[in-house]
Amino acid sequence: MAYSLFYAFLAFMVVMYFTPGPNNIMLLASGLTYGFRRTIPHIAGIVIGFAFMIAAVGLGLGTVFLAYPILQTILKYAGAVYLIYLAAVIALSGPTTPDGETGRGPMTFWGAAMFQWINAKGWVIVIGTITAYAAIAQFPINIAIQTLVSLLVGAVSTVVWVLFGTALRPVLTSERLVRAFNILMAILLLASLYPVVMDA
Image 1 (cartoon, one colour):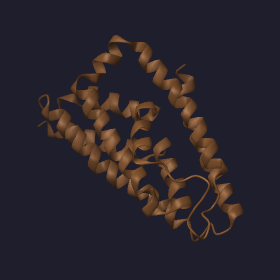
Image 2 (cartoon, rainbow, N blue to C red; image 1 turned 45 degrees about the vertical axis):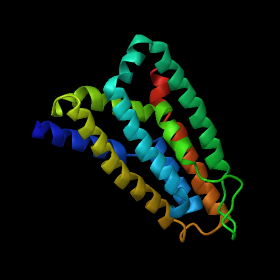
Image 3 (cartoon, rainbow, N blue to C red; image 1 turned 90 degrees about the horizontal axis):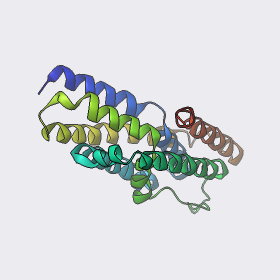
């Protein structure tokens, strides 16, 4: 293994996973609105779904996108539309009621896993991983290492962001404050569309 390149890849993954993006903003809002336990399927969907995406693209699915560039365009704009929808849902979310229910529950495992395929930041990470850090080991060992690192770093990152959201629950006690916070998260989620729009 090329250890210096591996450490560079690890640093890349930590920075990309922990910095704000659509996944982390949604996890923060979900932690506040629904709590940690109810957000676990969302966490698992992101971590497993994204690791699967790295493995699939690294093992050959990426050639399909090279052969049919229109698929990337379709995914990009489908992701933008879905992010706008999610931003609206988050903006309209209020605190949970005493019985723990709201009008809409947290994102499901499959919803979070499938979202990775239309997540613009996710594609930046995948392309950077598969191209810039391919030489960390021989194929297909390199893909296995990259997938494992994604699972580990992703698990830590997602848990941290949800815990940050749940830590705000005792602070944001009124419905008005929760709604204001969720509107702010929705605005940040919409701001994450900027790279998609600029790349149009």
